[in-house]
Image (cartoon, rainbow, N blue to C red; front, side, top):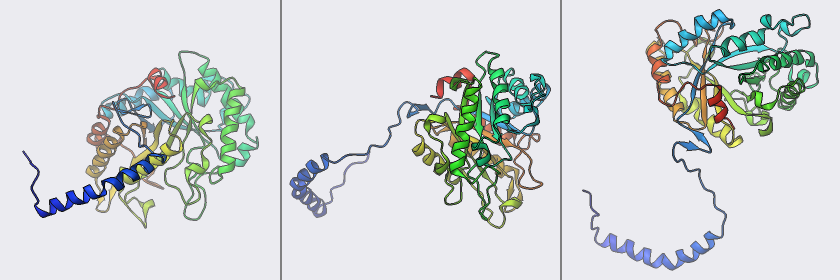
Amino acid sequence: MKTFKILGRKALLVIFVILLSTSTNFAAAQTEAARPKIYLPIIENNTYYGFSTANKFIGIDMQHYWTDSDVLTYMPVADTLAGKKHSVSGWFIDIQDGHFKSGHTDPKTNNLIRQLEALWKNGYVSFVNITSWATAYAIASGQLDSYLGYMAEYYADWVGLGGGRRAFLAPLPEMNGVNSNGQPWTSYGGDPVNFKLAYQRIQTIFAQKGVSRNQVWWVFAPNGWSKAGHEFENYYPGDSLVDVVGFSMYNYGWCAVAQPWPKWENYDTLYEPYISRIHTMAPSKPIIIAQTGSTADTASGFDASAKNTWLRVNYEYLSHQPQVLGILYYDFDQSSWECNWRITDGNTFKAGYSAGAGFSAFKYLNWQDLQSIIP
């Protein structure tokens, strides 16, 4: 057992200084007591501002159009890889999708309803990224209202089937992404003022078509990293319009698009700073990692073990973050122009993904579970 050491003259000197400063410290303490204090949040019983470390979901973005047969074919592949069922399936649809035009009114052929329903009836909640090739100004000024009206009507028809049907809708994701030349990654990007107006207009049209706030989870889904002046805080529509905040971040490693500044990144640069900033911006909102992935391209070439380690380490980190509600892995092969993010290519990445998804915080959460967690 360790004991206090006797330090002789040094100890006596320390005691003398302490006694001498007691009266001064007492007076200072009285002055300090009158000052306002800032208290750090206290984490108790695995909770943090009402969020829990113990109940999170895993989700996946897959490179498929979701018909009944494709859901039954491909989602079990992802579930087997994870060793548990995914709660959420992410996918993308454009505002100007052709099936929103008049004359295409059969719900069975509508691209929105078909995919929502195919996933829902097999136990998966959709995370729908609503994209567009129009500018934020065009959307904000009403130029796409007819398309948005059809989309909202179809969504209203779908939730009208009952049974608690509900989805995450993320209008105009990664709107703050701007490259080194100052060009936005998307046609609607790089315009914070009109993005906020467009986001609000989309919600207004859905409400006009009969979609209530308790029939959809509205998501603000920026990119984490941004060029100076395009920080996601500048694009945030406000707490009253947002239910969940998500963000995208990837480990590009040494894949071609990362040149000439390749870097292998983990949670300390991919997630930690953005989780902190988002929580400061919107402390009452749960956070979803809306898009993420890792390449297997390292400085030494293709390395499956490095990607497997990445999956385990980063999912473990996220499993301990109480503000984080879930994570969606971006299972796309974009090697022809960017990177290969895929994990569902056989057993190459089974060890890493099953280890990462295997942490106890990650559970299958159905829509009732999600509804009880999201404020």
